[in-house]
Image (cartoon, rainbow, N blue to C red):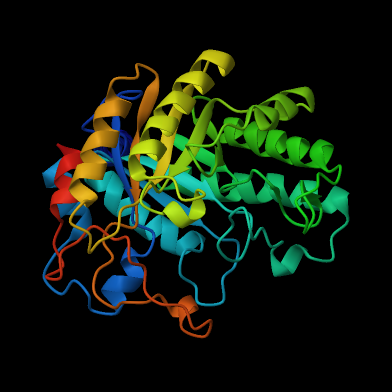
Amino acid sequence: MKKSFLYLISLTLLMSSCYHRTDTPHGSWAKGADVSWLSEMEHDNMFPDYDCIEGMHELGMNAVRLRVWVNHETGWSNKADMLYLARRAAKQGLRIMIDIHYSDFFADPHRQETPRAWQQYDYALIKEAVREHTLDVLEALKEEGIRPEWVQIGNETPNGMLWPTAQLVDKDDNTNGCWDRYAELTAIGYKAAKEVFSDIIVIVHVDNAYERRDWFWQAMKEHGGRWDMIGLSHYPMMSAWSDGKSWQEMNALAEDNIRRLIRDWKCKVMIAEIGMYNDNDSSVIVMSDFVNRAQQIDSCAGIFYWEPECYGDWRPAEYIPLGWNGYNMGAFTPEGRPSEVLEVLFR
């Protein structure tokens, strides 16, 4: 009995040392990457002799971000796939952000589709589904001995989530009165996350870091929404999305907005997504400029590159039937190795 008890203690300590340690202290500057496509890319033999997580860690990456879909038909980015990548990241001592989309596919300002299994639910059942899904995802990590540092309750949600139940705007961009529901669902996700990990940092995430959205955060507060940290996306080379603004303007506006959000809402801000064109000689200059700006802001928590491991003409399975091209803002070379853009971010 005594030997068995000592063995269990030793096993517990061993698991703790593997999964609970990180190479960077909780709360320090995050140099991260969203690598949610990695397992699918490896399945497609895009990295036959290279471990992306280990390689980027050696370059200086200290955190990963992993998305979770409810039930995508391909199986990629579902809970099991996320857990597989989370185990690998944890073994490297990396900090982890979990990005819960509350959808079967990408959720963003233009698409927040209710999961197929939830589409016939009334609002009471939607609330319960959000709670149970949040608990399920985080408890699965806890059972693995993995403690994520951050969790997103929704992905890029300036227009709400779980449409039409908690949609904030209609097709003409008019507010349609679902603020009570959106804020309540966010608060439900917040509370569920804290039930599993009391110290987890809960993020509410919107797009366009350069764009002031005082109205959004004010409405969130007035309707009972809850968050610990604000997450922003920043794609400064996509001038078509910003009324033709130059990258210099977008970086400067993003810096100003980050400072304003920190001051007004008394919380840290994370750049949860950033991306640069992979075939543009200016990408290193653009990234260097933004990293230098962000690192001068005391309560800017860090930067995550979105899917840097993409290179070549690779497309995820869900893009093919849609006729979409491959992602052109990866940060790997044509040889499948980290580019100079990542060296700037992870230095």
